[in-house]
Length: 285
Length: 138
Image (cartoon, rainbow over all chains, first blue to last red; front, top):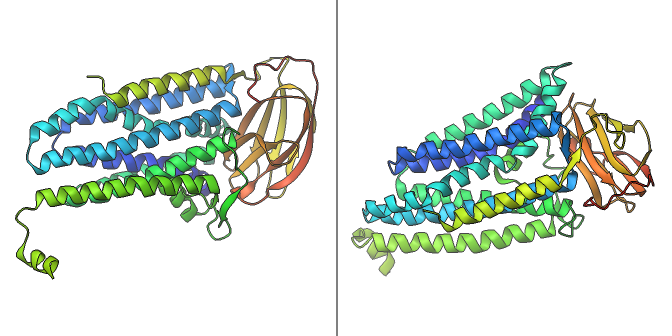
């Protein structure tokens, strides 16, 4: 039961995190009318994943291993692109807010409306097929024991509660801090998703180097422990990471975090023509 | 308004849909060309109902009788290259790995606890059934 609970928690966490931040953002800029679009993306991903999973489990056709790994790998890389786009789109919209140009925010939102549906869809759907196959396998087992299904359902439920708590937490902090923190969190999450996608493609044999490990800390952080689960579910941290995964992760974080920090600093400078005197004096020293 | 990321999204969706279609393999619904092998993954063993099968669609039906999450791998003749893998087999759950296997020598192994070299690594042989496998990705 605990083992199945942890699988459910791990599969649900990352999606809950991204959706939590997305909803907090939309609430912060008072665009509640966009919420249905986000939920549309989430709903579509859940329905399509469960439907595909059911037809692959109970129907006439299954999915070959190679196709499953390729789909998961490609979806992960696409999800990274979209989350990255979302981070910078939020910053751009925030600049509009800072200058109180509400029209700019509005135009970004109408332009990005379907982009938001896609971000929500990919955040949930990326691991959707794998999760659905796991859930349907638990359903099949429920003829003999209900424990696996109960555990899996509880795990997913707890991940949703954690996503909600994150939303409650970040929706309170002020806007500038909100963008800095959620942006930085999302960059680390997206880097993990990218590395995970690379690992899938390595498993499928599309990319080389599956057995060239940069580090293996499985003994200290067992992947089936609760803390291993949390690290995997939120940051996609793999205790046994290949050189290619590590390289891609570092390259992504290095590049995107640098651009992000520069953009945030640029905003602050342009927004602070009336800087506090105390600040000026320390800078002058 | 169609934005650039939206267009990219549609292209991506089409690619994934095409992959899903070409990657489809028949489930074991009375199809005589499919071979089902049951696997029992316990705390310290990985017992297969057969260690030989004819080439074509192979279905490994893996049941986890241990109390840790397990994974099942079909490896190439070097014992490293992954031919097929099924993850997230929670305790009490049965999951299937479907592979289109060419004739040759393979290894099977289970990984309860998801770490290390795994347990019950054993040789597995796929004999030539004469089935045309040109469609397969393997």
